[in-house]
Image (cartoon, rainbow, N blue to C red; front, side):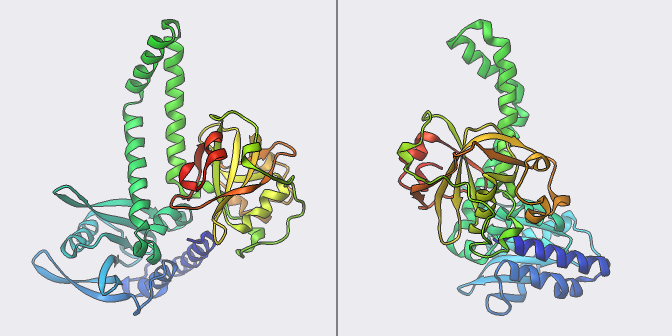
Length: 386
């Protein structure tokens, strides 16, 4: 899923909505939703059928778009006009369509708001759950959810993995937030029993802070924008432009990296176009940081698909104080950089290209992930460290 393409779709859609805020359903489909389907690589009539018949509530209805693979609908998109606010009744309508046809994925939208659904089977229980409710302008920050509804992801089975992890993380966050005090007491009691009762009160305070950091980390995992903004200097191409400087010291074997095995490594994904920012700034940027870490590793996406760069963290600062090689607006739209987005600066002479990069197997960081330095040193593939 290309963030630049999503941002362009949002820009064009907002312009349409601003000029015609009360568009009916037919015009919303024509002016906005066909472009949305294109974004997800669904093509009319090749793999998308209009007005697909479905039995529900004792009647025959027609779903606006059925997304088809091998002659079978795998997802439904139900459209409303921009002049119509989405309601719980609309949710129930789409859910009924999905249940009646055993369709796993669903999208409900009026062009301004996008609701994503998944039909889930748990033992004998079958139901449809909402997995995302996103305003148009926030779509670029929900790339993981969008990716799950792409044709290739559904066809390969990756969609289920993406949404499964999002659901697991949301449940973990819910439990941590609901039981924070009880968990903090339990953890502090364990420490007091195994270390010393004198640290009980200190341990409870620290464990609460740890839970807060863990919740922040989970939010970063769910937020597909946590990998960093695709810098504008890359121009969306595979290699981007030449950096103004190159802070890569040289190549290094992973076994030669110094540090304790338990040291925390933040693993970020980047397109090849993002490497210009990395190299010329000796830094990685515009990211949310959930917890402290000592090292950064960069997984290069696209055709490379390797953990290929490594650096030691110096500090984490706001973009305006990072002393970047170029003005911020050459990297990203400054007005759209959230207040909690930071720049990770590396220690001088610490950015290396790995002589023995870690190749992709089945797991890769779609956003910020954490690993340990020992795992990075010994990993044969990305599955060994993620």
